Amino acid sequence: MKKYFLNIIIMAMLVLSACGTEKKPDNLQTYTSGTNDDYAYITIDDKVFVPFVAVDNADRGNWIGIVDGDENNRIYEYKDYSSNEWIISFYNSGEMDGSMLMREQSVNKYPDNLTSEYDWNN
Image 1 (cartoon, rainbow, N blue to C red):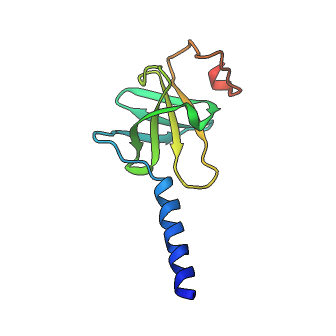
Image 2: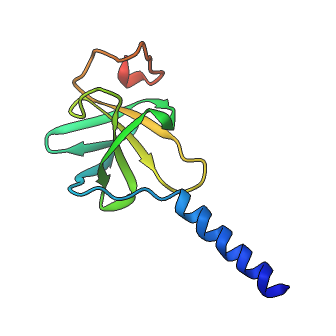
């Protein structure tokens, strides 16, 4: 009976761990993080992305990059918007993970009637 119960637990753990995995895409871009006195930002090439507003995890598009070489620190596309202007930053910790919409700092046309409460976006 104990062996049967142990097998059920092992199978349940395998099933649950497989449900939360996302296949790593080929050719992920490498982003870099930074901070200043007001916020943490993300850069790639000559683009600097600043926090805009928290969004639903369902708003994440394709997984397109990682930050600082950490595969859990992920960058996703945002809906049908250009990833040169809008990205979603998501840290996959497995605990209360939330998505942050980030805008390239020179962008001033905001999508979907979203507004930001952060001073640097006004």
